[in-house]
Length: 331
Image (cartoon, rainbow, N blue to C red; front, side):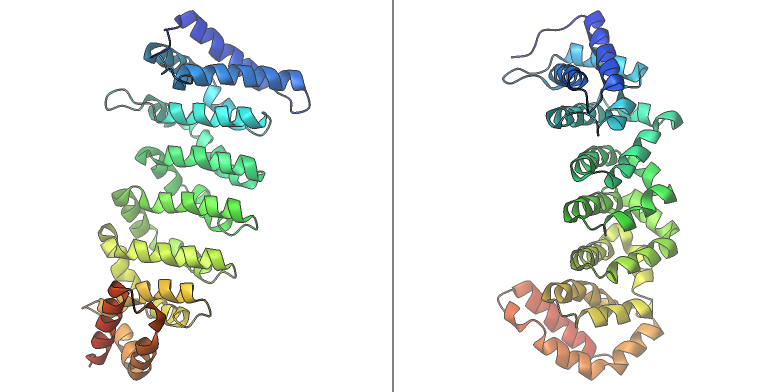
């Protein structure tokens, strides 16, 4: 069952009252918190429906139309910190519902956000990772919804200040915030393959220099996640050019060989999946070949005993045997 349509005048009134309540909200004033919660809850029902009843599409469209005429989207982000806990949930759901709203092949909210004056919303969401844990995680939810749009993801990728700050966020002391930021960081580099490949090709030196900092991090989780993501990026066909360049640089091979001997078994295992790309490359550079030949016997002996406890992992066993053969055959 769908909710009944609400008159356009009532929809405009609800958006106006929501905006006024957000403008006035004060974390120390319970009356303003209650008003804000009431109007956000009503808007959520209009856009997403209530328990057992779907939203009326006509009313939802009217709400959205009013939102585009106002500063509602800006206020939802700017006032997130001030509203109550339950109101935060409603606020995030309203924002995300609007962002993914589609009409045919168009996404009107994304089109609206592409305007220069409205791109500041993305800036504020990225800055959200500096807020308290609850607000940082909510900003992450909204930001990842935005990143599902290739056009919005492109804005962040091509703004050095917006993208580069993630190299700091993924290493903050709060585990939950760092993990959430890494999830967003991964989406930025993997969600839209052609866009991401083009970005990495054009910014290879800058990005990889900063990425090396993640691989050298003293934070175990950061190192493991970054190493795993690196392996995924190199093995993605869309990133062939980046992979070719990365595995042609001797310092990268040396780093992986060192990480194969890391005290952490998990770090070793993730490093193996990157190391195998160097060895399997049929067009090794002279510098890479020189390192492998210089360490040929040591590598063979090392790999033969490498993670013997994974004997029940057939794929790993096959890959390890393949690498040992490749290294033995080097001349």
